[in-house]
Structure formats: C-alpha cells, structure tokens
Image (cartoon, rainbow, N blue to C red):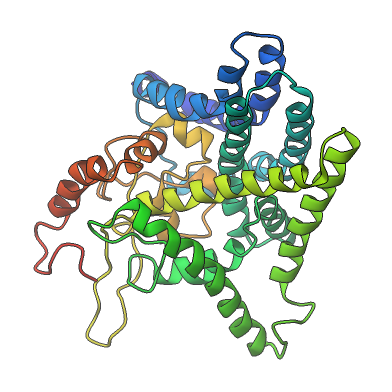
Length: 380
C-alpha cells in the first residue's frame, strides 16, 4: 500500500537497507533484559521476542501491505554483484553466536524471573534462532561459495540442525510436493501429525543422502569428508562450552547444555512448521515414465507481505525459490499465478497451530487451486 506509491528505484533502496531489520530479533533478548530487570512486568518482557514476531509483525504486515518490488531480469546481474547482500547474510553467524551467549548471561543474571519468565526467555531465544540461524542458514547453504556454504552450516549447527544442509538441498528440493518428501505436508494432514515424521525422517535422510554422495567419491560415511560429523560435533562443542559458561556464572553445567538444546528444539520446530505451511496440499503430477514433473512455481505457497519479506530475506517468495533454488534472496520474484497464502508467514504460523482453523482456511484454497485438475485434490 504505502510502498506502491514510491518510485521503483526508491522502493528498491528501501528494500536493500530494509533487510537490516533482521538485527532487531538479535537485539530482543538484550532489550528484554534491560527493560525487564527490576520491573514488575519482567515475565512479560521475557516473552517479548515472541510477541514481536507473532503479534507486532503480522499487524504491521497488514498496515504496510504487499511488496511492490519485483526485480526485472535486467536488474538481476547488478543485484547479484552487490556484495552488501552477501555479507549481510554471512554476518548472521557471528552475530547469532554472540546473541546466544549474551542471552545465556542475561538468563543467569535475571534473578527475579519467574519459571514462566525463564521459559518465555528460552522460547524467545528459540524464535530468534528460527528467524536468524535457520532462515539465514537456509539462504546460505544454497549458494556456491565456500564462505557462504560453511557459514550456513555453522549457523544451522548453532540450533543443532546441521543435517538440514544436506537433506534440504539434496532431499527436499528434489522430492518437494511428492510422497517422498517428509517436509511436504499432505492435504488434510494436521500439523501435529506432520511434525514427528518430519523430525525423524529428515535427520535419518540426511545421513542416507550423505552416505550415497560420499560413496560416489570413494569415501565412507565415517570419513573426515563427511561434513555432517563436523557440523554435529560443532553443536556438541558449543553446548559444552555453554555448560562451562553457565558454571563460570555460578549456575549448573547441565543448565547451560539444556539451554542450548532447548533453544535449538524451538528453532528447528519453527522451521518444520514453516515447511508445513509452504507446501500444504500441493502436488507434482507423476508422468507416464514414472517420474514427477519438474518443480515449478506452482508447487509452493507464496506470500508477498513486505515486512515479513524483509525479516525473512524473502523466504515468502518460496515459489520462485523452488523453481530457481540458487537465486539469491535479493532477486527472488513474486508470481501472482502461484498459489497464494491469505496472510504472511507469521500469521499463518499461528493459524497452523490450530488444525481445525487451518483446514477451514486452507482446504478450500487447495481445492480451488486444483479445481481444473482431473485428479483428486491432494493426490500425488
């Protein structure tokens, strides 16, 4: 709404520096601690990151409206050459690592926090992990430079989900919107039925895929060439360092380890809920040769709300991402002909937590999208 009245060049400049708002979630734990200490509302402040992402952002999404900037093909080369976008994403790794340890420090020193407040603070850190470690890590693992690949893997390791680097690229992107993909939710499948299978399958499939990839190069699964070993080892090392860090602060060692893995669980659960949203009920047709049709912009739900686009490095333009997986976030395009979500990701996340409400809103949209198809809705 507001942005549509601007010149395209002005809107593009706003978007370029608008991506810096990913710093806001990183600052939320410090904000909560600073304003919550000594306050009678300390418990409420502890939950503030959650409120920001799932209450404030959806409201602002509706006020700011849709994202009017859709890069032209002629703009793609210049946008790709602009190193600002690349290094902004890479900066997420050191920034999240700092945020993780400072939040641990605040948690120990925020003595007046109730149990509800402590839970809220850990959950809030997990939400920050979902927005930063998972989302930016996802952007980086799709790129072809070593610095971006390693930064992406390390980011994912900070939330104990290093396997996503392999499973997502070589599993999910190959099998998306087919029965072979545990991250593609079926028509009429509830979230709480979807999640356990996603956790288990995606962990095991990462190792299976890596074993096959290494075998083709003449390496065993337990060789030093297996990056999964390094990324999971990094997660364990950081958890142990966090435990020692808590001990130095006067707390128990196990509390630091528990804090690390708790925020990890929240973060990668948020990822799988977003996966549930992104492909719900969509399917690729099986061709006469037994293979599935090529992935295109029809196989992911799209959303184009401006603020969430900025927060999530345009993850909401998911249709374009799956059709052109190596395309950098700054040049992802919105396709009106793709299936469209009624709201931004943050709002859809809250709706997905209530399966009857989700189905009431989304099932008619799936049926409507496939109304001209002869096959049964939701079939693969």
